[in-house]
Length: 217
Image (cartoon, rainbow, N blue to C red):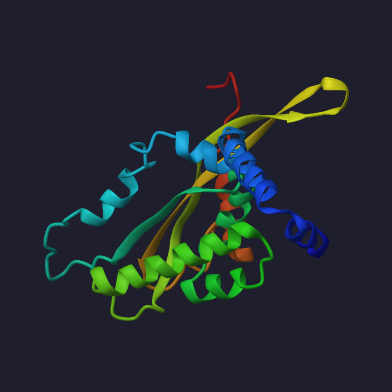
C-alpha cells in the first residue's frame, strides 16, 4: 500500500487527472457487477417481507370472568431478511425454544455463530417491547414459547470456474420469528413428562385389556 502511494505521488498533474477520469469511467461498470449492494438496490422495496406475525400484538381479548385463570401476556417480534441461511438458523431457533429469556440470552452469548447474534438481539428487543408496550411487570418472567425461521430473499448468481466454466451460487436470506410468553417455562417442552413405574404398569395393563382378536366375536 505504501509503495502504491509513493507511485501516485510521483505522477505529475496531467497523469493524475487521467487516473481520476479512468476511475470515474470504471465506477458504473463496478456497480453493475453481481454484488450484494447491487442486488439489494434492484430488489422490490415495496415488499418488506412478512407482516402478519406482528398483527398478533394488536389483538384485543375480551374481559375475563373473576373465576377464570388470568390470561398470560405475550409479545410477538421478528426480524426479516437476515443475511444468513435458513437451514443454519433453524438449529439456533430450535436451541432456544422453551427456555427462559435470561437463560436463552446467556446461552446465545457462547454460541459462536453469526445467526446467534441476530437471535439474541431479537429476543432482547421483544423483551423490551413486552415491558414497555404490553404491561409485563417483570422482564425476567418471560419464556420463549415459539421460535422458528422462514425463507427470505434468494438471489442467484454466477461463480466463475477454470477453463471458462460457470457455477451457480445462491445468496440466501431468512426471517426469524419469536413469541415471548409471561410466566415460567414448562419443565418438559418437547417430550411429555416421564411416567413413574406404577403409571407405566397401569398403561401396559390397559393396553393388554383393550386387545382384540381379529375375526372373532
